[in-house]
Image (tube, rainbow, N blue to C red; front, side, top):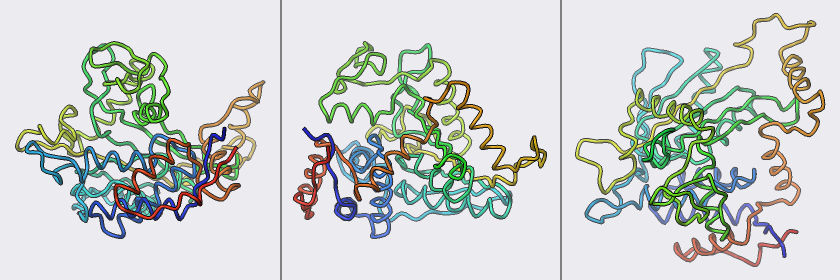
Length: 372
């Protein structure tokens, strides 16, 4: 049986944009969400594709309900406008996203970081009152493709991670994403992108969608017992015990400095006390590589030659089977380019069909073909 199905890019983007428009987002917001979902699928990202994006909006965003059961009281407001706040530091911008959709907010923030880096060597944008931006790797990857060293982190939608030594989830999956402009050196940007849990929550949802059990050690059920049933997972473990815990804590602390509030009430819109905040926070940073150069590389190498020599040394000494971070998504992108479309599983195609029915959008399934 075929394991992948090829979906035309335009078919995908039209459906995703229609789904966001159906929920009240404007044309630009819907187009940005669709384009970013294309980027995730193009690179083989299963945990944060359009299916996940729309589900997050359903549960915690524009479709979330308040204590009275009314929709439209969640963490995302269609048509919201970003407010750029005054800053006494020229290389740092402070934004209030006013609950704008995460993908266009993050894309705009990374663009601003690149412009700041062009002028000051490095640039940062801190975003308060934000909504989940999905795949952090996508934003840093695009910046690295333009020649920047890029970083982003964010607080996740919910606190569903148990701190090391604890028993109650008080942290988000809180990802970190780095990318480096190494296309000339190794053929693709090195992209180091990880949730601070053993797996992202989107991976649990992927397994549930495909009817597959998860390995022990990924998460626990409502009673705190480890489970292999993805439908019973109520909380996740940090990876590397205290190490993942510490990295997750970084995101919560940065959010605390930016304006984020208590992790355990984040995006729980039916129970947030008056005067509290339930939104996410983002942090972005871009740096020009030449801004970091000490100008004294061994053997008279240039900066690029030095980076290439370091990578070659790491992969030498019998390490020829080792891979670099970003290599797998580069391979997935090459497959998408080879086939001229986006590759999805049968379960994912079925999820798109369901989305089309829900929003009343045209969706030509006959244009999707099986790929062995």
